[in-house]
Amino acid sequence: MKSSEADGVEEPGFKPLTADEAQAWRLKNPALIPWRIVALQAGVGGLMVLLTWLLTDERRLAASVAWGVVAVVIPAMVFVRALSRQMQVAHPKDAMLGLFAWELVKIVLTVALLLAAPQLISDLSWLALVASFVVTIKVYWLAMLLGWVQRKSKSTFY
Image (cartoon, rainbow, N blue to C red):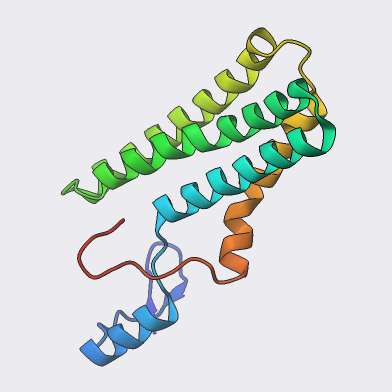
């Protein structure tokens, strides 16, 4: 253990992994493929819209559900695209600042889409919109929980 003089807390020493240890770590901790998650969110969202339309035969409910999905998927697509660019930044500090900036863009875009909903959808159902918004967001966690997130290929990050 190494002691930090600044705060008096002991820190473990840095030990680089061997090639075998690194490979074992990669197998235990598969990389996320963000585009796959966004596609799964869009697919589940599309299924929710279709089921809402078929079960209720109300266009306004289906449109409200669709807008909830759009308010998740479009900002997620923008963020994943920006994230793929940030992976190419040479300086970690710049990459981290870019990550935070794009996360802010994602949040602002999400809020803007939600605020635009009443102007774009006549007779909006906020309950349907919020329910589809929440379900679409939770698809990410469901995919991870069920192990649907697969490892990246060796040739590309996404």
